[in-house]
Image 1: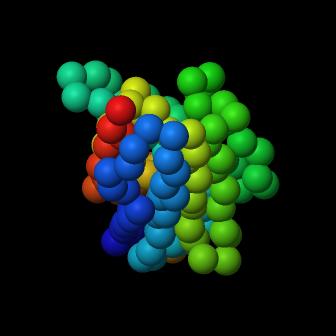
Image 2: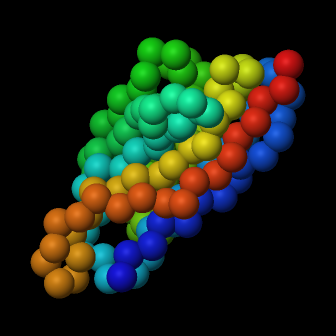
Length: 120
């Protein structure tokens, strides 16, 4: 009914950059908050960055000044620009969206994840 598809992950050297994208499709009435989470091996999934429908952003301290979250409401897409990447940023990155479907359901949906690997 609702799909979130991430892209843009990959292998990069420390200091490099990647841009993640996440497209939300399906029976969508409205999208509220959107965010990016990450999960490193053996660790819990944690919030990296979030953005409200109005464009207000929030970041975990470890990525402030390096990562930028943005969204294109017309395209139902959220982005994560990651600069000055560190080996500690290595994780599977997941897109998240809080939305209402055309059927009136308020749901929280997740993408399938995209691997980001930063080599030292």
